[in-house]
Amino acid sequence: MAKLETARKPRPSPIVIMCGSFDAFADATYAEVMAGTLAGDFLLILDHLREWDEQGVWALAYAR
Image 1 (cartoon, helix red, strand yellow):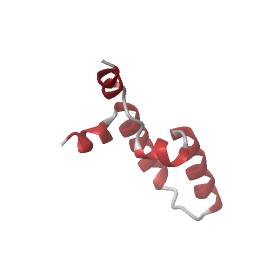
Image 2: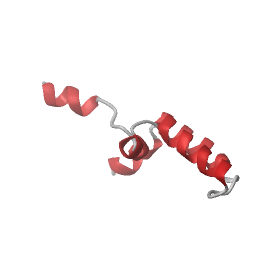
Image 3: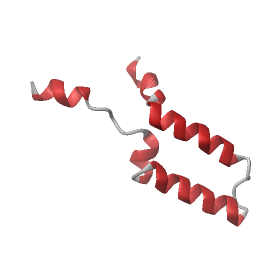
C-alpha cells in the first residue's frame, strides 16, 4: 500500500530537483538577466517554464 501512495505523489520537476524550488531558479534567472549575462527575452521563456512546472507537463515526458 505504501508503494502505491508513493507512486501517486507528484514528483518534483527537473528544475526543482536542480535548484530546490522554482522560485530559486526564477531568482537566479532574473539576476542573470539584470547582470546582462542572459538575454532579457528569457523572462518570457521563464513564464512558460513556470506554467510547465506548475501544471506538471514535464511529467508527461517521463510517463511514456
